[in-house]
Amino acid sequence: MRIVIQADALAAAAFVATAIANQIKKKPNSCLGLATGGTPVGAYRELIRIHSERRLSFAEVTTFNLDEYVGLSADHSCSYRRFMTDNLFQFLDIPLEQTFVPIGDAADLAKECAEYEDRIRQAGGIDLQLLGIGSDGHIAFNEPGSSLASRTRVKTLTHQTRLDNARFFDSMDLVPTSAITMGVGTILESREILLIACGASKALAIAEAVEGPITASLPASSLQMHLCVTLVIDELAASGLKRSDYYRQSETERARLEKSTVR
Ligand code: PGA
Image (cartoon, rainbow, N blue to C red; front, side, top):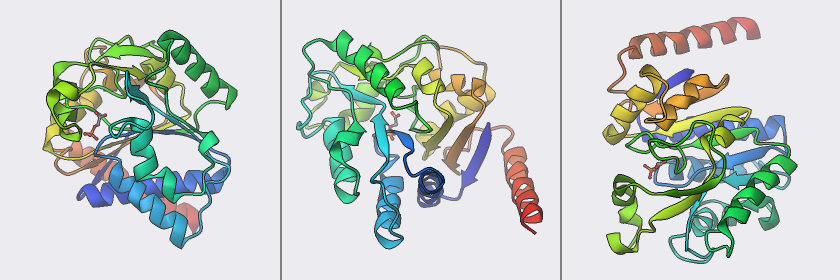
């Protein structure tokens, strides 16, 4: 695992946006896995800036979002489809038909989940998956206890997750009780994973995900099994890490080696 500690949320967002932009430069028809929530918004803002100022085209990119609330239609003001339109897609040159978000009000949810997996497969798999992390260590909506082999399916949301997300709704009662989510197994098949976490409320989950045992009780800990994961965190989210000095030293060493290779 590569642990990148940035001074603040703004710097973390800039790092993530640059990594995504570099992926698209390297492979213009990249398949990106995208996340919703408060944390990725800064990175999306920066990507929009890179797109408009540096003319980075998303015309050949395909995207798959991690999850969607069950029961919300695509045009519902709190749906993740709407979130993506409002915060990213409307500002890019990506064709709508190349953007995928699970359909939360599908008549047959099990069929929608199976088809979502098929769509990812048909697209050739995800090159770079962006993740956030819940205060309880969930990734996407894989709540504590989720099978580490799980595929896209419907998950019941924990009370904590509903509380955390209530800020996006008019009242707690309106927060859906379940969601379609990519599984942990689905996420781990991505070729590369970039997790962003900011703020003190994420410190415990980050510490356990990086330095604790691999356990279904903390789904983010499964990332320890992946060959190519980068955690981009701010100082507050890093505050529970025991080996933060070592992670900083590793980044300094990485930069030194890159410089000497370039020369
Ligand atoms: P947040 O959500 O970015 O709104 O904190 C992250 C998550 O639950 O994955």
